[in-house]
Image (cartoon, rainbow, N blue to C red; front, side):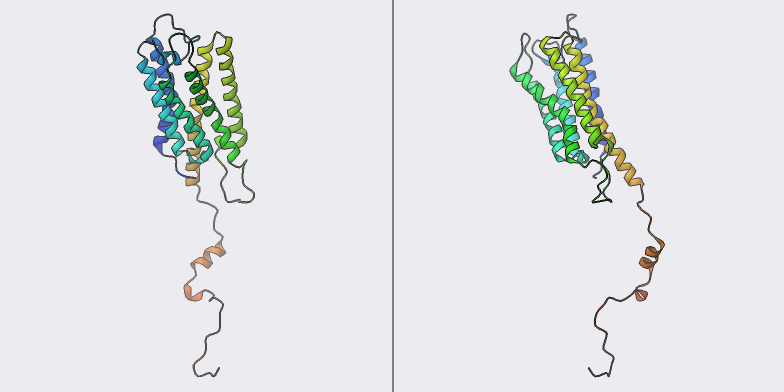
Length: 244
């Protein structure tokens, strides 16, 4: 497993901080009629929002955090990293499809759905690609980090999809759309951080483990002088003066 750099941990940790801080600061800049329980984060970056650049900048940086995490999280496997990268690109693309001041936007709704679904499904992609646990056929192969084990990753995807279903229900006829969106967005932003920390912990544990001990007989055989070692098999050398 490749090393997880420190900056990757910083980028993954910045994602939920950017999301919460940006929504809080941008929400405080809105008129008194804005309600974070009822109104969505998308409205903070939409048309007619006060200081929309705050949430727009946070969404762009948030998508960059997802892309950076997908680039270095080799423990998740290539399919899972690709889906995570789609979520990052879709998050950045939200700024190109701002929500109108009145009514909805098919483009914004489509891009937002792609972003949330990609960020909810990428743990399951790693669970289906990686082995369930220790590989019996390759006992020396290390077990995947805990975040990428099949029961954990599939459970996380099920939870994130449930939150997305709650948000979709609130959009169609609920009164807590903003709350559902915020809980879902924070949840999908936290899991890349936990996955990076899991891979980092497994990497450090593997670096600290010296490996299986070498038996004394093997160590003695490896340390024996070259002249005492058994020669390779082959034809016996011919003695001088002896006829063939």
